[in-house]
Length: 162
Length: 162
DNA sequence: GGACGATAATTCTCTGGCGAACTATCTTCC
DNA sequence: GGAAGATAGTTCGCCAGAGAATTATCGTCC
Image (spheres, rainbow over the protein chains, first blue to last red):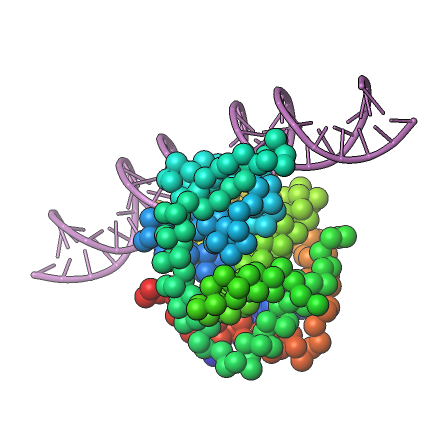
């Protein structure tokens, strides 16, 4: 009835009973789920001829509309240089287009091409079904409570100081 | 009263009302929390003269005792070649030692050195306090429910097929 | 007991992403 | 209106980690 994290917590209880590492019951599982989800998305994207990072850019553009590279980088919590590379690849693949930003000559507006929009729209249907299926193990009630707790952790950000 | 994921869900509702992407309320937050936690650990480890990956190896050895590189790689869900590199660094830093495995001449037993053990034992105290503090926003009740739901997601693994 | 497939670790190569520099443009402030 | 700092995007160099290939050893099966 336990998972890998239960084993780890038990090991800590044995080796360092003086420490309370029980919070790893939450954060350890979050990290592991993230790793598992990442691996899943990598595979799934590869099967659709995309890299996971590219999929993220396409979905961001699809749901929020055209954006400048800096805002995309912020939204995806990554560096601007990394975003430059991703956009290079997506542009070479004909999935996005950089056009001049009329309001700021330092910048560009990135938008989906027709092909990019078609691709992401068709992939999204399957993606939604995948996500739905992954969450099936939880009752609606549990899912709501889970979301609420995760939002709490994200929101009151006790991470900054140290 | 919303976070970044609430915004994203609202955007999807507007742009693709035909799709049910509500499961992103769970998985999006898990991915974001993981990114935030990773950034936190990177900074904190750097302040202690370690890389986050090295910290993971040291804690694995500390709680589970000496192990061979393959098992360490599996436990940390990473490749063996990556583990070789990490161990090279840790060995050069004098924090772990590879000794011959008497039972299998293909392999080595990796163990903490005295210095490695001292380092990780002292870091762990602060680490436990950090984790404890990060979870403070949740009541014990909420935390238990959160752990249960996360364990469910980890355990009934609907990820494999496609 | 020898052949053959599995496993352990390493090396090599490749790649995605980060940070630091750099250029161009914008904004602000006197 | 011009100097000074901030911001946008890119380039460059670097690094951690993945995967393929390699070598050595183990385990198994006849």
